[in-house]
Length: 394
Image: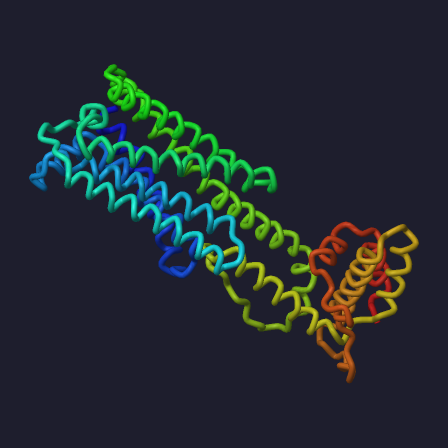
């Protein structure tokens, strides 16, 4: 792999992190978001510092031959820990238990990182190796143990991640399961990376030469595995957000029929709140619901429970269930009230001391069902035609 093969995935991780930073700034206390950002940061750092041009530059800047080797090993170890911590926070559970398990993984891998640094300091690596450090120094005192330790730590994390993700994927559905299966696929490549690296190092211990596995086969496997695994962590979060946004916009659109129906009830000159084109869908839904409830208040003097009761009976007789029949009944009363309000442009109807509202002891009616009934219910359409012909809904 050339330098570009490392820098392109590093740039992809950096771009993904850039999209996450605004959310992290506003929700710093969210452990899941912190874990995602830590994983993206470390994954990008591993690719950037494992590139041969960077290895050479770091060695030259520090003046320490092969210092990039323990640096990359420490970053890989930290990345392994970040994956485990993210999985713990992602799966959730009692907060105290989640924090305790996360701290244990962090502590354990921190000990590994410190040990890697100590072993490198104790060893001797006089010849700079940009691509084959693992196999070249596999039999060197302390350095060989450092190499074996980082491979073991990476392998343990990969096995644990595969087991955890596979078990969890059998218990969930939807985008979460898709993400978990992607992570498992990515870690299969990581396990293959471990197998090739360990095989090459063990071959050196036994006096054989399988350096090609470590130098040419393992790096692409690691790059592919890291990219796939990172994608598995991000895809469920992004896709779930997109699904939530789609559901919100769908709710906004479905409320349209009811919103347009009650607009006539707004008093002349009432200021309309203008939403910016970039306003969040959630705000638009809230504004539309608020407009609908304001419309109900203005239509209150024109509500006639006789229309609601009659529509309810006809809906039940047509086979509608209780919830649907209540929505049809309310929609019919709203449609009749709108006709009555249209027939009274001067607003001369005296407001009764006790107005009819769309709330009951069970709470507000389902606005979505009322809106759907306004557009699709033949009972509501019949009431609308009847009140239009009579010239008044009162």
